[in-house]
Image 1 (cartoon, rainbow, N blue to C red):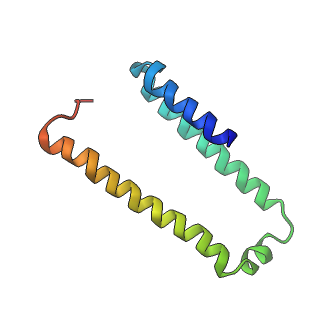
Image 2: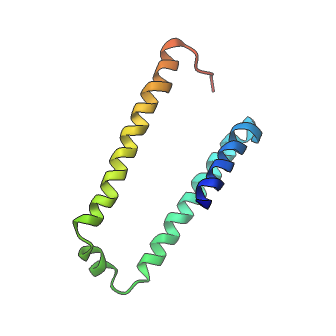
Length: 97
């Protein structure tokens, strides 16, 4: 629940308080933070002695726990993009960047 509250607060700040001029810097900072997070997770997993054995023993249930949310996320993003972004482009209402 705390994560959702922090995310919603970040969305509100980004929408109403964050200056548009700082968008590019914010995107780069988000990319760097994401890369550091992925790297640190890799280091943490690499330190486990039986990582490969544990990975192969997880089975189909764990694979589905990854696959289903990924596919659903892709479909939702595609549908929302078609609904909101493509119609804007076709009508010429998109702001030039």
